[in-house]
Structures are given as structure tokens and as C-alpha cells.
Image 1: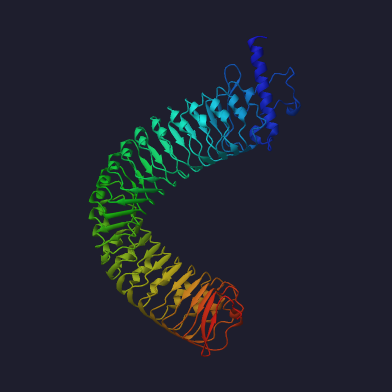
Image 2: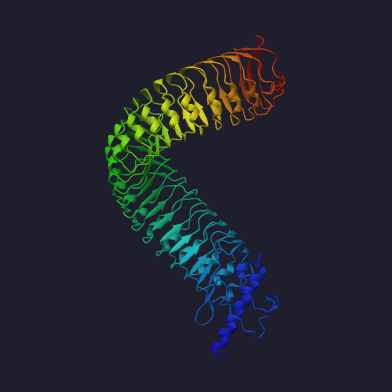
Length: 619
């Protein structure tokens, strides 16, 4: 048989093998494989003994070499549904490229895949393959790319994977692989990307990983790895990305990590690292992202961090860091995000932070910072989120904060601020959240707050504000939560508040509000919580409140209200808590309240008697 006849015969065999696999698929007639045919014959009845010569080289997704043999199969995102059980791997001795990603293939990866001796590229990502990675994968010694991401593979990574010496990219992420990593990974000297995140891998990071000097990207995040980072990681001189977040790693961060001069993204967050942040981190001159949050790191923030001129995102929150914020942090002129919350940092906020013109998020909450907010913060013109809550900051709130027109989140609660709210706050036209609660602020609430059309959550509670609730609040059409409790506000509740249809919670307790409860509050169909207790409210209780079908909690105690509780007050079956004591209500407890199965507790003063309703509402 001459060469051309042999080639034709082999091409026919490959075509028949592909047709057999197609016939095994659950959606074999899908349009993407419509070209896979030997019309007018029926593919399932074709025998390899027939003299018909077939070439698959023009079929969708198939490419052949000069001799007419299949060397590439690319069926990515072709809506294929089925298994590889009937794929005759041994019939494709010249196959170098196999791409089946983004399909609905399932079942095991057959061990016969090891017959593809010339395979260089294997891509099976984003399917539903299950079972173990077959050991026979390790026979594919020409393999350069191996991608099994986003499947349901389980078991261990094959111990002999280190035999794949030509491998440059290994992606096994987002599966269910467990046990420890094989030390033989350290033999993959040509590897540039090693991505194993989102599995159940345990044990330690092998020191042999430090042998992979060509590695550019290393991701072991979201596993169950333990122990410390091996100092040999400092040998990875070409590394640009290192992700180890969401593991159980502990011990010190090795000084050798500072040798990674090309690293631009370092994320060691959500582990159990302890001791100090190594000063060598200041040598990583190309670093753009540094995430060390949610560990047990202690000591001071190294001043050397100020050397990281390209840094755009610095997150050291949820640790045990103490002492002051280093002044050198003000050198980070490209910084966009600075999160240092939930530490024990003390002293004042550096004035130079106000020079970081690119800063869009600053969170220093949950520390022991004192002094005042620097006036230079008014220069942070693209700031979107400023959170300084739960510190010991004092003095007045700078009027310059009103210059931050892009701000949507302003949280200054739980400090010792005094003075009044700056009128300039009315300029914060994009603000959605404004928290000033638990300070020593006083004076009238500025009517300019009513200009904040996007505001959804306003909390001024536990201060010393006085005066009326501004009528301009009734312009806040997107407001969902209004909390003003624990102040010295007086006068009536504006009837226009009933127009704020987005309100979920109104908390006005512990003030000196007077007059009647506006019947318009009965229009707030989304209202879940209404707290009006401990005021001087009087008059008839609006019966329309009983129509609020989402009401969970109603607090009316310690007022001078009269009339009847609405007969349908628990009509919705959602009411859990009700207090109405120390009022002048008349009549019996409404029947809907007595039979209210959702009610956890109620304290009511009716006809001079207290009625306590607990877990048994019918009692």
C-alpha cells in the first residue's frame, strides 16, 4: 500500500472515530456538528471495511496536517453534552491540540487519554468532568498547556505530574481536589503559571515550589493549606502574581518574599499569619496590590511600605497592628484604596493622606485613632467611600468634607466629634450612606441634608441634636432607613414623611417629639420597623398603621397616645414585637393580636392593665 493510500485510510479511520463519538453525544444533531457527516450514508451504519474514503479535515473544529491526519480539535463553546467514553484516543496519533472547554461534558476523563503521545495542548475547562485526574496524563510528555479548571474533579494531583517537563501552564483550579501537593511539582522547570485555587488541598506548600524559577503566576488560594510559606519562595525571581489567600497558613511572612522584585500582586489575606510585616516588603518596587488583611499580624506598619510607588491597593485590615500610621504612607501617590480597619492603630491621621489625589476608598475604622480629621481630606476629590467609625476622633467635622462630590459612603459614627453638621454636607449629591451616630454632635440638623437625593441610609442617632426634623427630609425619595433616636428633637413628625415610599425603618425613639402621629405613615407599604417610643406624642393612634403588611416591630411606649390599637394590627402575620405601655389606649386587645402566631413579645397598657404576650400569644 503506497503512502497516499495509507494516509487516506488513516483519515477515514479518524473520521469514523469522530462520528462514533458524535453518535454517543446526547445532542449529536446540534448545529455545531452538522458538518460532521458522510452524506448520504448513515454514520452509525458505516463500517471501517468499506472502501469509501472520508476526510474530516473540512469539518467544523477539525484541522489536519499536510498528510491529512487530524492534529487539532477545537470544539470550544459548542454546547456539546455527553462523555469521552466513546472517544477513541488511540485513533489520533498525530493530535497535538484538543480544546473542549465551555461545554456540558461529564463523566470521567478516560485513562486512554494517555495514548495522545504528541499532545501539546489539552483544554477541558468549564465542563462537569468528575472522578480523578488519570495517572496516564503523566505520559503526555510533550504537553505544554494543561487546563482542567472549573470541573468536579476529585482525588489527588497525580504524583508523577513532575514528568511533564514541557509544561508551561497548569490550571487545575475550582475543582474538588484534596490531599497534599506532590513535591514533583518542583520538577516542572518550564512552568510559568501554576493555578490550583478553589480546591480542598491540604498539607504544606512544598519547598520544591522554589525551584520553579520561570514561574510568573502562582495561585494556591481558597484551599486548606497549612504551615508556613517556605523561604524558597524568594527564589521565584520572575513571579508577578502570588495568591495564597483563604487558607490556614501560619507563622511569619518570610523576609525572602522581598526578593520578588517583579511581583505586582500579592494577596496573603484570610490566613493565620502572625508576627511583624517584614520590612523587606518595601523592596518590591513594582507592587500594585498588597492584601494582608484578616490575619494575626502585629507590630507597626513598616515605614518601608512608603517606598512602593506603584501601589494602588493596600489592605492591612483585621490584624493586630498598633502604633501610628507611618507618615511615609503619604508618599503613595498612586494609591486608590487604603484599608486599615479593625487594628489597634493610634495617634492622629497623617495630614499627608490628604495629598493622595487618586484615593477613592479610605477605611480606618475600628482603631484607636485620635485627634481631628485633617482638613486636607477636602482635596480627595475622587473619594467615594470614607469610613472612620469606631475611633476616638474628636473636634468638629471639617466643612471641606463637603467638597467630596463623588462620595457615596460617609461613616463617621462612634467617635467623639462635636459641633454641628457642616452645611456643606448638602453638596454631597451622590451620597447614599451617611452615618454620624454615637458622637457629641449638637445644634439643628441642616435642611441642606434634604438635597441628598440618592441617600438611602441616614443615621444621626445618639447625639445631642435639637430642633425640628427638617421638612426637607421629605425630599429624600430613595431613603430606606431613617434613624434619629436618642437626641433632643422636638416638634411634630412631618406628615410629608408619608411620601417616602422606600422607607423600611423609622427610628425616632428617645426624643421630645410632640403632636400626633401622621396618618400618612400608613402609606409606607415597605415599612418593617417603626420606633416612636419615649417621646411626647399624643392624639389618636392612626388606624392605617394596621394596613402595613410588612411591619415586624412597632414601638409606641412612653407617650400620651389615645384611642384604640388597630383591629388588624397583626393582619399580615409578620408582627414580632410590640410595645405600647404607658399610653392611654382604650378598649380590649385586638383579636388579631391575640391570635398573632408571629408575635414573640408584646407589652401593652390597656384599660390600666399590662398584658405580656410571649411565645404563646393566645395565653
